[in-house]
Length: 52
Image 1 (cartoon, rainbow, N blue to C red):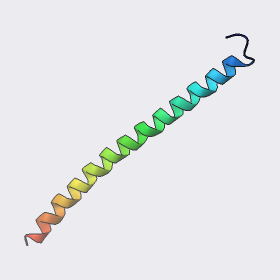
Image 2 (tube, rainbow, N blue to C red; image 1 turned 60 degrees about the vertical axis):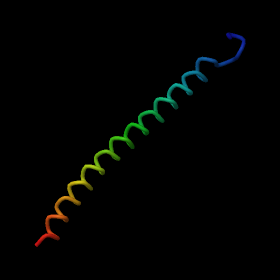
Image 3 (spheres, rainbow, N blue to C red; image 1 turned 45 degrees about the horizontal axis):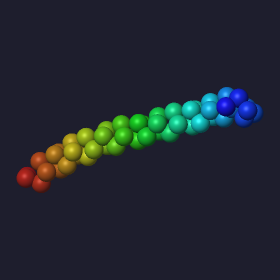
Image 4 (tube, rainbow, N blue to C red; image 1 turned 180 degrees about the vertical axis):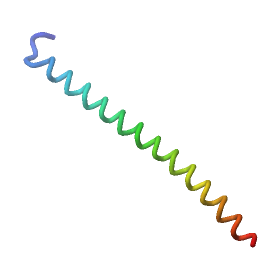
């Protein structure tokens, strides 16, 4: 494995990329859940207004 020049840099670049993508996916999932809860609250308040 030490035959490949700059193997440490290559592995580090892949690890940083994988970590970045994982953080981005996590942020998207958190935002999706937050927006879903906000939409549920909005639908609940709108359905209460329609009853009037």
